[in-house]
Amino acid sequence: MAKGHRTQIKRERNDKKDSRPKAKLSYARIPIQKACFVLDAIRGKSVEEAQAILTYNPRYASGVILKLLNSAVANAENNSGMNADNLYVAECFATPGPMMKRIQPRAQGRAYRILKRMCHINIILDEK
Image (cartoon, rainbow, N blue to C red; front, side, top):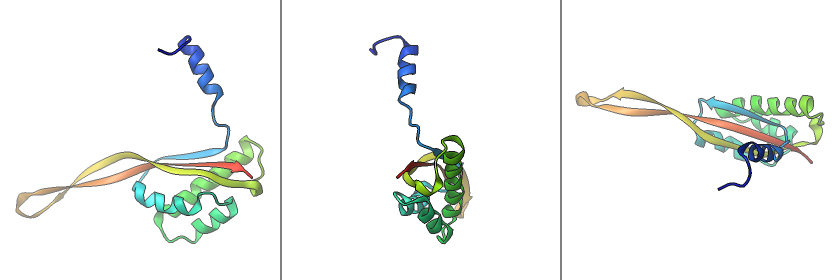
């Protein structure tokens, strides 16, 4: 059993919230594996370097992640008052989302299942 009243426990948990600027994209129509290839390339890099990598990366996910990175930078500037030149990508990860299940007709009346995967992409920035 937890000690204390549930409101007290929630209050303590909310006090420990992460104050770093972040952006989240839910239900991105990208499989998690394909998103992680791009996220691994920008993890730990400065924002300028990450934007350059994403701009010239040919993968579809890079355009979506570039838009999300720009949103995280805007959040840092407007909400936290940070300077964009000092920011770097502290964390970036993708978590699995729901799957759309579709049917592909096959020979002899069979039906194969197609799973159209989604993911939730998170980018967390921090100052150097």
